[in-house]
Length: 374
Image 1 (cartoon, one colour):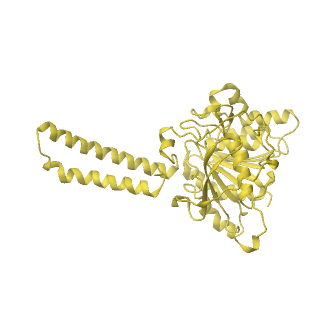
Image 2 (cartoon, one colour):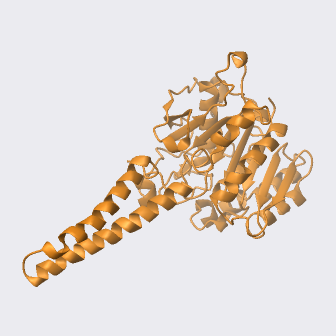
Image 3 (cartoon, rainbow, N blue to C red):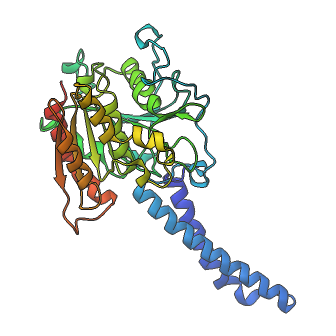
């Protein structure tokens, strides 16, 4: 049973009701020696406390899409089959154009929290060796006969850590907010792709490749990307692809777009950071070499020094001390054709939370509409 699903939420409520009714009904009816009566009553009190705490956890978890499964919660989930050394480009010598298509069968999403029209699949990446769920939201124009021969731009959306793949579609209500804007022509029709990013239990991969450990970068930027192109009417060129994230997902989005301008044209960073060590659970942040290599500032600096600044557009928003300064640092370093737009979130707007990020969804996709090719 999913931790973010309606069934678990209703089960938690039912258990709280039982925990309240039990002592009211049985407290004075418990029989036996005083020790037995005391133990039974203690169990009822503890049961009431546990169920109350569980319900609060479920409410907070549903509101923020933190943990999707029991494995995510207890840090026992492992979605990595193999993690061979894939080299600096994350392809390991694979020529994607020579590989057979990775078309997947998608079914309607089972959790209503993600909204109507969302599809899901369980996918195993051939290059990365990672397996996990992927959710896809199709724009209203996708099934319109007038768009029958049209391919659509794509935005991969990434949660923070911990975070569920459902977060952008469920908690941030991205599809629900964007549908009317797309129907009114105020936002381009994008395909939204929400892949699993929690791959190794209780650690944040930082969206990096670590030989022998995990190939999170290749999972997102190679396998998931190609699978979507092979399965849906999705544009293939980098000019039609972007990646967006909040918190730890924001760091990933910026890193992936700057490291792979051949795969992404733009990135959106909401309350993110440059130094991966700012997330204590980050694998990249624990290794000095990986920490430096996966810092977007260093990626951009290295590209500039080679005389090849990436053709990457960045949208960075954050409050003071929570992403804003990280955006300004990138903006100061950017050279054409790299562009960086920085938005300041005022104090008191909601802090580091989903309410702030949810409110930015329309603005973010209006910006993407002017950046990505149709």
